[in-house]
Length: 171
Image (cartoon, rainbow, N blue to C red; front, side, top):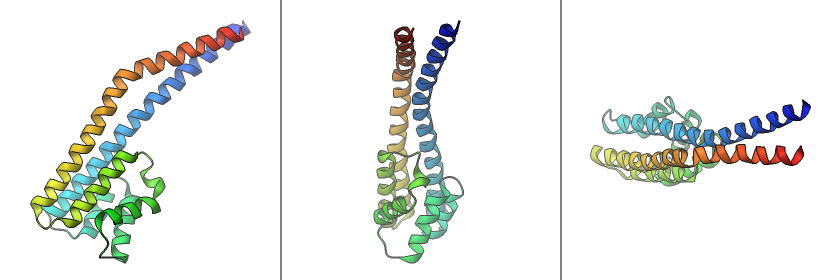
């Protein structure tokens, strides 16, 4: 009886580990979606509402990643002439935990966006910068979705099989 309970615990914990691995991909997709929403607000505030970059960053921070966008705004306030990519990278270093859900490709796309936004001189260039970022992150989200579909079931199955093998070896 205890052996059966032990086997059940191993198998269910193995299935749980598989779900956690697959869940990380889903969390990353959600973080990309949140970043896209904040960038849309940033883009709208700069291009259509004509806000200064400082105020647009604060507006974007109300949607997602408030620590990061507020950090960018405070860095911009301290050093108004800082380049866009430099501003973003410094804020990422200072606010490491605020972008915990984002991986390196998303961070690079964000730094590229900041570089394009700070160099933009017209609303069309601001809109184009936002479109480039959204296209890049859409591709990343699509890759994660397909990875989740393709490898998700396999990962869960492999974890369950590993749990079965371990339980057979121990019993």
